[in-house]
Amino acid sequence: MATSPKLRLADQSVTTYEGLTPAGAHIADDAPDSVPRNAADAIAVEVEMARRGDAEARRSFLSFVRSWPEVVIERPGDDVVRFRQSGANAAHWARCGHRTATTIPVAAVADIIDQLFGKVA
Figure 1 (tube, rainbow, N blue to C red):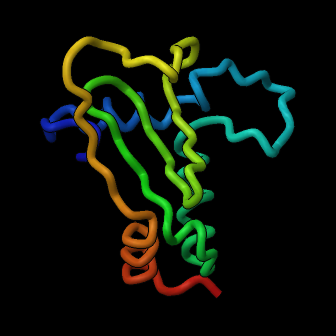
Figure 2: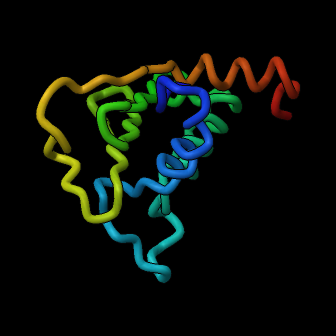
């Protein structure tokens, strides 16, 4: 719901947003495993790290931009990673006008998952 104000569009938004790449780069199939392939993988890693008690991950934030497809992971110390559609310039706004985003603490997501499924061993 953070990506679309309309519930009926949520499934399309999830498909679009999970496929966003770091800085809009085209990620080659033979890229090193340390390079996140898409926003979904990067979010999963960040939340899992937070569930396991990583202090930096727990102080991180996820921002879902509704004005255009973009996910931002903000880590402490000004470490920001933007995920955009392949070929997009992550340093520029995609449209004129306002940038509207929903920002969620990673710790909140991790704690909700822990409540639903139990703590990570």
